[in-house]
Length: 296
Image (cartoon, rainbow, N blue to C red; front, side, top):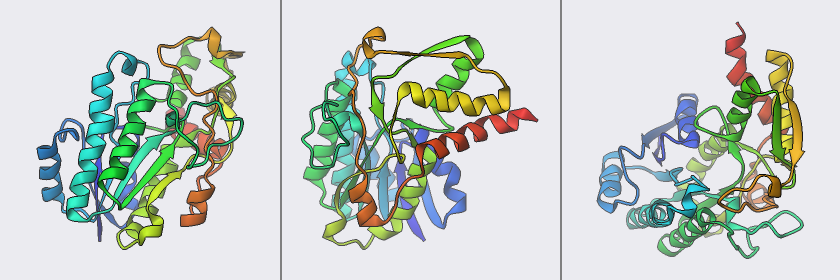
C-alpha cells in the first residue's frame, strides 16, 4: 500500500485529505504544525524516519496574506525554508515530493489565464515567500510536482465560502470585490487529485516532474463567487442578504492581490489526465455538505 507522509495536516487541505483517506487504498500519516515544524530539519527527518513514506505531500504553509506584510520572517521561514527542507529530505531518500503553491506568485497583470512558463512577479510578501519556496524545491530535489492552485475553500479551516455563509447570518448586505478574477478551487477536488497522483509518481520518469496549475474549472470574480454561495445557501436557509459589487479600491488591504489569478490547467490535464469539476458544481456540493445536516 502506498504510504503518504502529509505535512500541514491541520490546515484546510490537510484536514480534507485525512477526512477522505478511509475511502482510498492509501496509508496516510498526517503531521500537524504542532507535531512537526517543517522549518526544523531534525524534526522533519524524525517524522520521515517514523513514517517511511513512498511519497511526501506538503500542504503546510504560512497563509496569512495580510499579516505576512509585517511578519515577513515567519512567512519565509515556513514557505521558503520549510519547503526547502522537505525537498532536501525527500531528495536524500529519493522519494517524490508534491508541494502545494499558489496563484499569488503572479502579479495579475496578464489579460488571460497564466500558464506555468509565464514569468512570476508576486506583489505581496506572501506571494514572494511562496515563489521562493518553489525555487527551493526545484533546486533541492528533481522529483517534485509543484501544484499551483487558487482561491481555495472547503469544509475545513477558514476560507471565503465559510466566511460568506457566516456573514449571511449576521448582515443584511454584503459588499464584495468584483474586479479581481480567478478560479475557486475546492479542497475536495485537490484531495482527490493528490490521491490520484500519489501512486503514479512513485515510479514516474523525468517527464512528469515540474510545475503544474490545478484549479476549479472555469473563472469568476469574488462577487460572483459570493453570489453562487448565497444562491445555494438560500435553498437550505431561505432568503439571502443583498449583495453589492465593489472595487478593490473600495476595500483596501495591507497586501496587494493579483487582479487576475486565473490559471491555465492544460498542462496538468494533458500530462495526468486529471481535472477538477466546474467551480460552480463544487460550490454547490460544499454548501450542501455544510448546511444539509443542520436542516434536520
